[in-house]
Image (tube, rainbow, N blue to C red; front, side):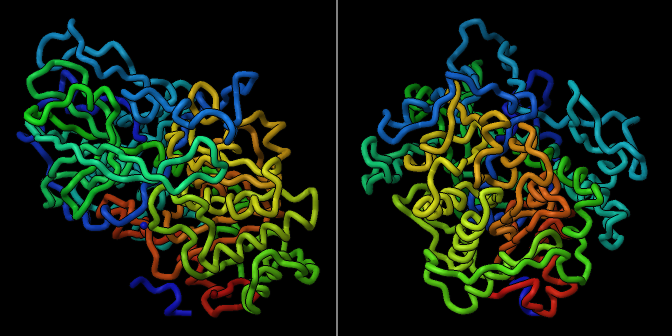
Length: 570
């Protein structure tokens, strides 16, 4: 199959060390970094919205939990506090009691934002049995000191020089994730001083209060813009949704907190701040800028490769060249909602014809698009998405017992799939699982109807209610909420890993390792040549974190020879 898969895509709210009282001047001891291929950051979709820590996910959903109705007030009524775009309860107003260059902040990072901690020397070594430490009953997946020492010297841990196999799987991907985490740690003291911030208006689509499907109106959004050195060695590799902290250079106040919206041409950074920042901003004011990076995705990825060691995952991760043990005889496709050609109809029938491992691959255009964040009434247009929707509809109609999980790298893909499916499947049978602190006004108004909200955050229904939904849609990382709420492996009869070529294997494995067992049918879609653009570490990129689960499967066994029982090209 050679050419098909050949190569040609919330951080913790803790204040960064650059703004802590014990930090030194980062410019005096700034570590050098190798090239990070910064040009990718301006064209890739935002990283996955992170899931909160387990302690926050078990939020009881009671009478105060609501599903947002299209007939209710605008979604802005549920918007998190302006001072913290993520909903993190920071106060960024000047504190009259502050004194000295770095005031002592009384508001601590909330418990729902897990933070990876540096491992003490005795935690483990590369060959040790323990690869993570614990804090308050939860693993924190700290970087082992020996691996940190190697990565610091740009030396790959020995396990990365061995072939990937069931025996090396956990250690291999753990080392890649540790390399990625070290990159974040290395740049945690990075500080820009006396930066000029400019305001820029951008026309974005505005959601209607009355329309169930939104409107074509536009609304002006204010971004904060600044320039950063485009030379990789002189600054960190920034991605959308990384946090930015801005403190007036002449003030001793808590910094304002915002999120990177986009990095344009590697050096122009657009940031979303709250109204409290905008109300005090003056064009001549200078700011000191620091950054905080997304570690929640790393934690979820570590948990997934731990869970993947279960024997039931073996034939999904390392498929044997054998047909499925349970071959079904699917009915002929009648009255299909989407118009399918012969190849697409055959793909749907094959998806319906098997149960259990190994996975079925669907190679074709990505379902996710580079469209703006909100496009009214946008539905799936890629033929891969059409096949996925038709297969889901047929599975839904086949048996009342079927349960389907659909995961994708980004929220927009989940939203457009849900909008398309809803034309055939009742809303009451579907649940759109969001990260707790996804921005509510980022969600299309018609999708909000299927998203329960509590205390201005997206909630997860109780386990009994979750089990009743026939279809659940989520990003890969946010699917962890379902696991934490109690959904067990085997609950879903079918799992669709959509656009899996656009994410790393550990992130795609979050859904696979937590929910698949020997009876689960797994369908993996992706575009040949597509890769994740969210990898910052050179070592992680060089040794395979950029190779997706979709691509790796496509290089082996029956997938490599395009056996139609295992893979369909669209």
